[in-house]
Length: 326
Image (cartoon, rainbow, N blue to C red):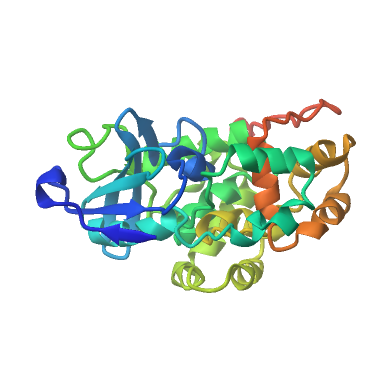
């Protein structure tokens, strides 16, 4: 894998730019889709010119545009960034795009032969997916906490409300970038959100308190990014209100962890059980089913998702809670 600076004439007056060559099949949207909190995520926009992201770096906010380019036989990604954090954003592009994600062991014939047919076929059809690694702990942690013990619809509604109310416009929004592209609040901005605004967002006091508790140690959280995924997940779980599910969901995104499983998810165990055996199961059963592929369990789960398999409806859906009227 290699990276190269774009010629100045091709950089569209970006503050920093890069070409990243994956060295094999690559699908940008398939790879980065896990980072997007629904189609209305204010910090990630997908358009005809590529995928736009906005976030804060150690040097300040940045807007990053990622555009797939090149032939299918030798694809590459063109990265352009604007804002005070543009250089930091571009420097992180290879890891963000899955440059450190190695499927070699998974794709070895002996290992592939152990996979269920549904998973093996999904890999055959999806050779271009990678596991991304953002390295941005807080950007992943806050929306994940908002998803604790509520429906995805409710969590994303609350996240959008808070983003539009307390986030900031991305560098170049409305000029070089989409007008509705937003940067997440900084830890200091999250901590200043009053209780009634969490209430309006439909975020219950337990989840808002967990966000506040975690972000009071924002610097310590960011120091988890360079650690191995397992160690970072364990340290996250020392914060009251953050358990194995939250930690797993975070390191899947920040570290590109190929083995992280979200135990305690409302749907995941039944989904994996139905896909692999035709029967629903619980967390313990899911872990037993996935045990033969230890080290690659998250890859197996991602491929089940990419297979198109849909879980039969086993029972009532989780009720959407509304905390705003209480």
